[in-house]
Image (cartoon, rainbow over all chains, first blue to last red; front, side, top):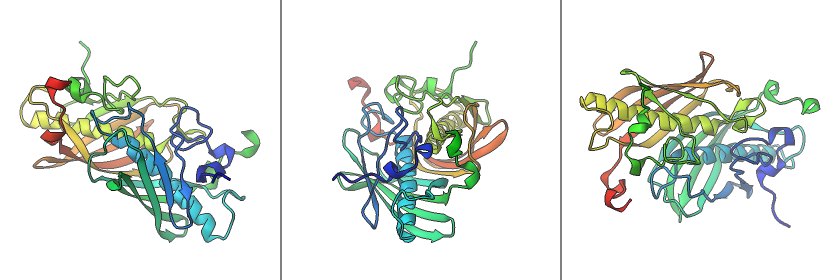
Length: 160
Length: 160
């Protein structure tokens, strides 16, 4: 059986993110997989996702890091609570801050390998460390502060 | 006469960025305008640029900040050298780091107003402070460390 991505467990009404929403047909549809310790994603940039000829656009890298880190926070939170991924109430996070260091220009045409790990949990906040590599070489590293989505931001299930 | 955007002055061979390249037909084509003290951009997210219903995707905000800040650094560098924007040799920057704080969820459906200012110049490095607002309310603020593009990354004009 094929493993489901973390984003496949997001509830439908919260699964329209441009970066990772499985219901956003225009989006990047990033898929992150949880192995019990970290989340891993493989992303294939399109030829037009360039910064300048030969290299991947940094905003795309930031987007992948954002969604992947948020997914990492969700998977880790389910695990910490001893709950099945996707069980209700949904554990969904939003980004409080995103700090990306571009270590070296990221060559285009090869898959990006993305690894996310939880560094620290403080109440509603989860600090995630994420790297983006090509051929095993780290091109970007990041810290993302994820915060549990406030209830007032969640769409009303009845109305969606 | 209509004012040209900072990105309109980028040389063709460095104008394919997915975020702001005027020659990238698939891209966001962000346009930043320099007023002598700061750079300003207005960006209209598409309806599918959502994080979750009603709000703008954080990765898009990071992308806009990235390109706008790099443009700010370029415009400020030309001005500091007393040179016409776009004159040769081209002053083009790349992103060393990007730090975005999402102050409040950004409502979708309204124009994003982006302001970038140079905070500090240190040799090849320019620190830019950028904000993204909707209806005058700051939704995100950022610090971007821009670095002059190394010569070896510039495409050979002869071969493009």
